Image (tube, rainbow, N blue to C red; front, side, top):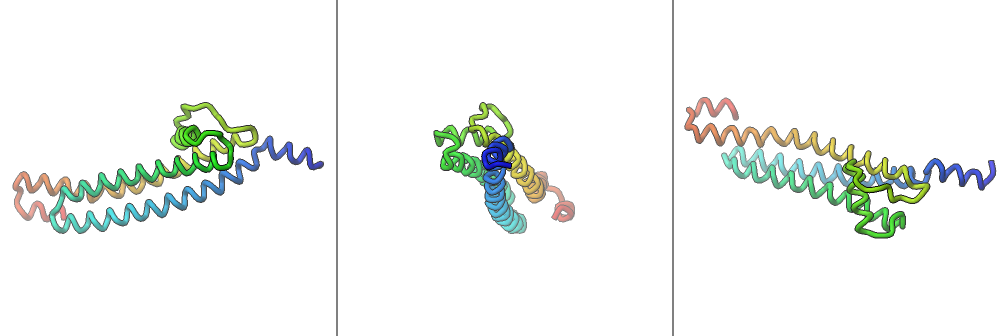
Length: 171
């Protein structure tokens, strides 16, 4: 196989897009995992302490603040993808790169495929990173809702002035 045909095959298969995409996917997932663990750990510790202190509104505030942090984490990952596309000169405009990344990461696909030939597969990899990240985030959010529900239930039981022995069963 000649060098020219090898280069042509590489371009047709988008091999450089796979390599770049896999490296970026690993970076994004590493950042996602580190941030997710930090957010979840802080929420779990705070909510445990707040439940013990009967500070139920503080549990709710901590929950919503954690959800906001999770949202911001995804925004950061979209910006990271967009910036990398712009830095590698795959898209000429930074804001358009970030918008394209957001469209692809969320799998909304509201933008046309702007990537140059030989890089088209990168859009699929960005979409996979978003799907992986959203699934991972959803699983953490589900586990976070346990203490949120406990706080909500206890707060309303106290408002109803239920006997202490009834409330104790939910602790």
